[in-house]
Amino acid sequence: MPQGKTREEQQAARWTELEYFAQIEQQRQEKRAADRAQQDEFAQRVQARRDAIDTYIRRSWAQREDRPMTAQEFAQERAEIEQEALAQVKVTIPTWEEIGRQWHDERIAAEAQAEAERRAAISPHDTWLTTLPWAERQHIQKWEQINGMEYPQ
Image (cartoon, rainbow, N blue to C red; front, side):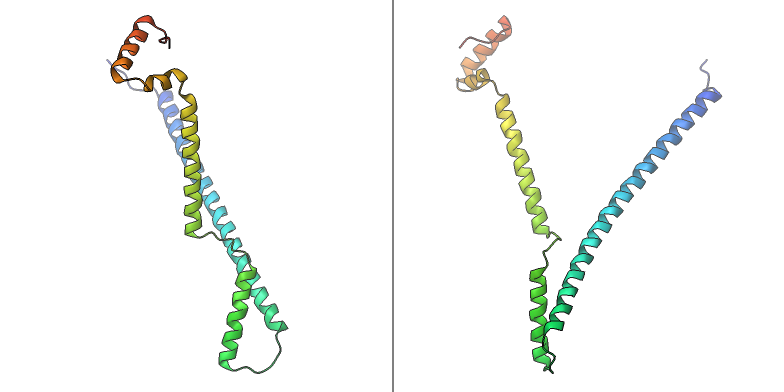
């Protein structure tokens, strides 16, 4: 007659279960902290860029002559200053196209590396076999199975 688990076994199983859930919770909190740090870093870069643009615009306005302007002149002046400010500040936020291009380049490089490793792993014997007709390959493979060694070239 099968007996149930003893109290110690039940407690050990429960402790194992609780440790597992605690580990999952810790991993989730670590991931949240990493995501939060990444978001904070991104927000700091965005804010630094905005601050640099604002500083450049303020300095440019301070250096301009102080004279009355028409609305059209003011708009033109403001557009010129904003364009200069954007040109002065490096773009630190990558576009989707840049991210995609970088991912594509990395993938192509990884595929080229894998292909080079695959080709390097092919033995000269295997390369020689691929140059032969199918029937001759079959004959050589049977010979190699029977004799337990590579077919002499």
